[in-house]
Every structure is written in C-alpha cells, then in structure tokens.
Amino acid sequence: MNLVVKEIQAKSILSVSKVYPYVINPYIGCQHGCSYCYARFMKRVTGHKEPWGEFVDVKINAASLLEREIQKKKRGRVWVSGVCDPYQPLEATYTVTRQCLEILAHQNWPVIIQTRSPLVLRDLDIIKDAEDFEVGLSVTTADDGIRRLFEPHAPPINDRIEALDELHKAGIRTYAMIAPVLPRAEGLADLLKGKIDYVLIDRMNYHYADWVYRKYGLEDALTDDFFYLTTQKLASL
Image 1 (cartoon, rainbow, N blue to C red):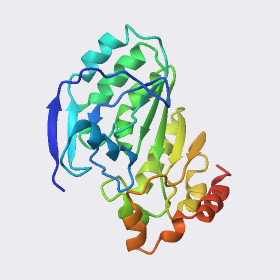
Image 2 (image 1 turned 45 degrees about the horizontal axis):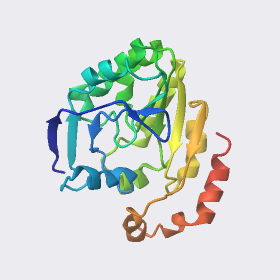
Image 3 (image 1 turned 30 degrees about the vertical axis):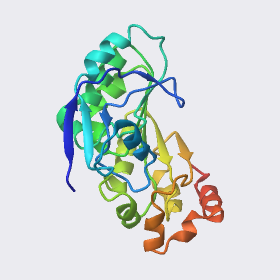
Image 4 (image 1 turned 90 degrees about the vertical axis):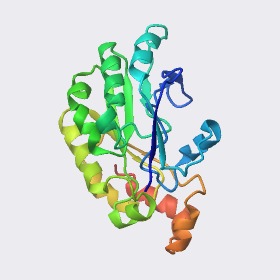
C-alpha cells in the first residue's frame, strides 16, 4: 500500500465533540484503512484525493496547540480519537498522541482513549499514573481470518486482546468496542472475559464494506437477526 505522509500545522486541536465534551485527533487519515470506516467522510472535508488509508497528515504542532488551548477551556473528558486511530503505525515515530496525553495527564483532565493498536502499551507509564484515564480497543471479531478480510492493515485480534489484558491488570479501566459486529464476533465473549470493565456494541451502520460481505458470501451477517443473536451472546460481558 502506498502512503502519502504530510507534516502539517493544525489551526486547533482540542475540539468540541458530540460524543464526549472534547476530541483530539492527532492525525488526519488513518493507515489502518479499515474497509467499513465511517471516517472516510473526512475526505469530503479535507479534499484528499488519495484512497482512504493511503494518506496521513501529521499535526506536528498538536502539543503546542494543546498547551495553549487547555488553559482557555472548561475541564471535560477528552476522546482520543474520533476520526483517526491515535496509535496508527506513524505514532511510533511521531509520538503526537503521547505528547498530548502527557499534557492532559499533567493538567488532570479525564481522557478516554480509543484504538485498535497494542502500541497504546508504550504509553502505559502515562496512563496508569493519570488521574482519570481509560482505554478501549476496537475488537470486531474473534476470527483473525475475518479481520484480514475487513481490516487487513490493522493489528491482529489476539494482540488487541492481550493489550486489553495487560492494561486491565495494570489497574486501568478498560473497554472493548465491538463496532461494527463482524462475522464470528460471538467468540469474543470468552476471549474478553476478565479483561474489560464494560463493552460497547454496535452494528454495521455504513455501506462502505458491503462489497466485502458480497465477495465472501457473508451477507447473513448484515441482517437484524445476526446482530441481535450475536449481541445476546455478548451480553455476558
């Protein structure tokens, strides 16, 4: 996969969110490029011509912006992140997410991290010492073969579950984001038990990945029955 990386100067970083009071997106675009990702709509806003998953803009001034903006805004929970993965592979080099977390922790702001990458463990030193941080990993199926069909550039499912386990054992509040519920997600009930404090479950709400279901004969997993039956099996979490 070709990847176009640009270093940019963002105009702001601590944005109002409809999900939590604030959101920080350290990057524009996402290397994981999951077939179903709702964040594809960002291309209409940013004007990128490259396919989703083949461009990333790095907000290299994110930390300096946050240092200023956090002084001017009322304290509230910050979502990291909404339309990119804050721990996509480039984060290992740029550390933009880590720099922002350091500032948020120093200012005692509550944070909810959402990722599908075990790279989050790199920042365990910040997360476990922070006053009110929690971490969620997106795990959409128990079958890594299914993961490769829908999320070929994302980390393996087992690595994500092991990351949740390590975070949970470190005393951090953890959650699993099973969204969208992909085929064979029901097996997550056993895999996640004892590793999370709560679970968020949602169905496939966008049609970007319909071609994947059709190509591999998985259309039954788009039905209401599939979602409700799978949700019942996951209810024990």
